[in-house]
Each structure stands twice: as structure tokens, then as C-alpha cells.
Length: 289
Ligand code: HEM
Image (cartoon, rainbow, N blue to C red; front, side):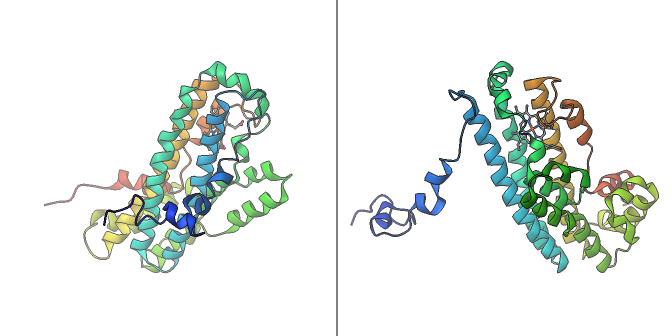
């Protein structure tokens, strides 16, 4: 008997005829394709690109939060490799997010200006999920909550994320439980950033993991530490690529959210969730034979 096209595919048209689940129903494709509403009138050709690129980022942010919550709960159970597995998945997504921003460079500066006014005062500052990604990483700056003061439901969501467990805390608490002890105040990012002495105490505690990554139980911790550093690296790279694209498209014009634009964005590129993991490299030496 010849094989029919679609045999074995869970979304084959045969299932649809049976009243079973179809691809479009399962993924809600018609609903999804109905969610792009240009503000320009008549709709500017490039606004669809602008909307779709932002919507795709928001979908990926949703998944990133989902995966990082999982990584945190594995760290709370000292399941180091499982946590690494999910952080690494996030890193693969981030690689896509860094390159995706450049699609916007196919839009000329004047073309963007032709519909930019219609978007005011909407701004990336109002991306609740981006801020949640920072908060879940441990980069917590309360001042950003003010952008949501008129939206109590979003404020509540963000406040919960602000007060909730983050990657940094989960990682540091796990290391302490596993015998790599350092002062508790190091879990506070601001304190760690402000004190070289504190950073050095963390580095001193976790340096053995980097000096002897192959020895047990270091290898899983080495892999997790490197994936956390990579997460930090790609978040920073996204910021750098975003600011370059912004400069290319709007130059030094002010941001729609009221910031100075490029100047403000440049100031965020040095943000890190794991400064000690970065600094640690400076303190390493080659192994003796
Ligand atoms: C032509 C394209 C873009 C321009 C001109 C642009 C411009 C800007 C500017 C000027 C800011 C500073 C805040 C303000 O005053 O509004 C900003 C922030 C932001 N943008 Fe964009 N942006 C673009 C594309 C994107 C895309 C595709 C995303 C994807 C999610 C994005 C997400 C964000 C986020 C999350 C912030 C807040 C960053 C922070 O506070 O650290 N932007 N953008």
C-alpha cells in the first residue's frame, strides 16, 4: 500500500477531518496572525516588521522566564547538571535574539520616522518581560517599577518577580550548601558590585572549581558556572547589538520612553548578574605540570 502524504504526522489533514486536533487549532495560528495591528494609516509597509519582531522577542522572553524558573528550582535541589541543561537552553535562545535584532537594519532611518510618531509614547521601557528577565537573573533595580505605576496588574507581576528567587541567589545558596562558603552579603548584587573585597571572597571560595574543573564534584559546577556566565554575556551582547541598531536607525534622538536614547542604552551595557564569575578569570594561573 502506498504511503499517503501526512501519514504519521500528528497534524495531518486526516485528523482534521475526524474532528481531531489540527496544526492550526493546536497552535492557535489564526489568532496569532490576527494580533498585528499597525498604528499608521494607511499602514506603513515596515510597521508589520516592527510589530512582528517585537512580538517574537516577547514570546522568547516568555520561554526564557519559564526555563530559568526551572533552573532555579533545580539549583534549590542541588541538581547541578539539570540546572545547567536549562540555562544552556536559554543561552541558545539568546544567541538567536542577538542576531534577530539586525533584521531591523533593513528598514531605513526615514522609513522608520514615517511611522515612529504613531508609536509614541510606547517604549521598550514598558516591556514587563524584559524587566522580569533582568530581575530573575538577579539584576534588580527598583526604579524601573515606576514605568508600570499606571498598570497595577503589571506592577504586581513585576513586584512578585522583584521579590522572588533569582538565578544569582539560587547559585550562591547552592554553592554555600555544597561547601564553597563565602559571606552571605555577597548574594546582594549591589553590595558585591561595590566591594572588591567581597568579590575576592567569592572568587577565593569558587576558584577551585575553575582550577580543577575535571575533578569530582567540580565538573558539573564548572559547566553550570560557565553557562551562567554565558547567559550574562549574551544578555550584555543583546544590549550592545540593540544600542548599535538604535544608533543606526534614530541616531542620537531621544527615546520614546523619555530617556536620552543611545546615551542611556550605552550605560546599561556593563550590567552583569555575576560580576565575580567575570573577575575570577583575572585571578587564575596556568596549572603546573
Ligand atoms: C528601530 C528599532 C528600535 C529602536 C529605535 C529602539 C529604541 C530604543 C530606545 C531609544 C530605548 C531607550 C528607552 C526609551 O527612551 O524609550 C529602548 C529601550 C528598549 N528597547 Fe528598543 N528600540 C528598537 C528595537 C527594539 C527591539 C526589537 C526590542 C525587542 C524586545 C527592543 C526592546 C527594548 C527594551 C527591552 C528596552 C529597555 C532597555 C533597558 O532599559 O535596558 N527594542 N529602545
